[in-house]
Image 1 (tube, rainbow, N blue to C red):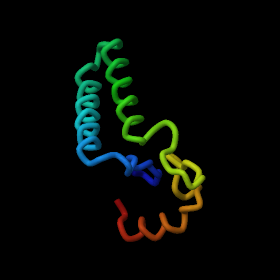
Image 2: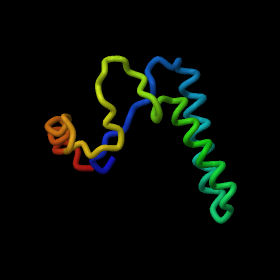
Image 3: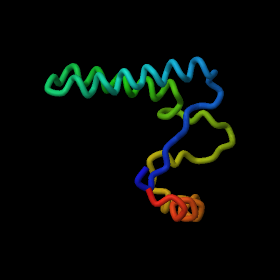
Image 4: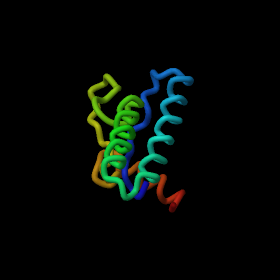
Length: 94
């Protein structure tokens, strides 16, 4: 998104568990939206989002074991994936 790399969910999660966590994440994101104006509710909802993203493997310790660095949220053009990103973004300008 906007030229940034984002970490994928941990592929070792079973499909049912991954889907449950995605559903929980969507609920937590809606809770953030619905809590606008209530600082405590927003904080709690954001903590739910973070906890769920960690459970999915999208944040926190890396789930891969090959020693590759984590470029999560880095601009693709500033990583070793720059050439790949240039080729796919040329094909898909969005």
